[in-house]
Length: 472
Ligand SMILES: Cc1ncc(COP(=O)(O)O)c(C=O)c1O
Image 1 (cartoon, helix red, strand yellow):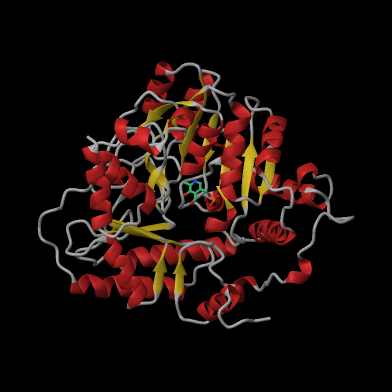
Image 2 (tube, rainbow, N blue to C red; image 1 turned 120 degrees about the horizontal axis):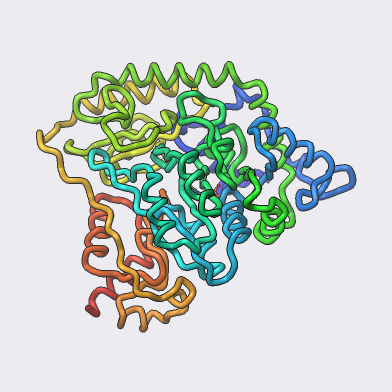
């Protein structure tokens, strides 16, 4: 059964190389620490005695109750279609067709897809870009207040915290502001499920007053890919509404392998203090080890301090290595780490590359990364002046709704310079352009620059949009 060219054989071969994962999933394939394997013989369906995720009252309800206790949440839901299905369900639960919603513009495409399904009118908040690193800064409470005043009939505010790069927003204050207008706050916490267990990752998002918090377990905790969790708290969103919406977006055949991985993860969390202390020490040691970097900078680590940036708070579990001002870019750095040091990072962008860490990383893994960065730093140069970061464009709206724009033919798009699609760099999957926005020269130049640096921008849409711009 183990065919030589099969995906399974390829995965097995790769698992036997010395490549170290500074990327998701958070279990880091650390079977030495976790001591588990997930074979076929536990992959079942809803047979007698094993409950039903969509109507949990037995062993799956008990697992959810464990989560409610661990995360101090009123209602917790295991998700096996990733944070994506929790985000779709959250938006569906609080909006009706043609409603309005307030979003941070740096939300993941899952949030936009949630808006597309209900043809929502979107009012954007633009987090300020950090000029030193190029990453999006925090969503400020003031910007939320302004957006609500401009769009008082919004049915929800949606923000991402932490971002892919670890930037955290002041959820407690933003929740208070939204609640004073009776508007629920949805937090895309896909990258922050570990925050509840660390004192160095930006605090507790679930008890900060957000109404719905969605987190990917698989990104930063020991749980299999696609596993996630959602929490519904407070009185603004009836949890039954969320459950009903979840039933639309979550598969009717939830994998027992994935669900048992979630349950295992909860058991791990109940006895994880010692591991999180080790994790913190690993991060502190890493920070100390890279203090002497001369050219590269690691965001909020080493000799870079959070006070140098406009962030409300930062998740120190994210290692964002900035190449700005040096003679290599983020994509090249990621390639060097892969090819020369066998360290695989999570993502790269023109001015930085992101190593995602978790409680399952080993001291040896951290030491390999710091040693590699010091060696690379020795061999590169700073040109003495900082190259200006790529300024994120603010696309103009055409006035068409998401649904109207999605239905435009390519010909109509060409004539009107309007996109009928999302264009994004992946990762992080934050749209540069959404359906209905104008593709002008500024946008095209931004995409060209991203691609010059070797960043992946979804190819088909990119070339289409190039053709669109020729019609100008
Ligand atoms: C900010 C953000 N939200 C949501 C998601 C979707 O999460 P999942 O892959 O668990 O569905 C991602 C995925 O990378 C993400 O980066």
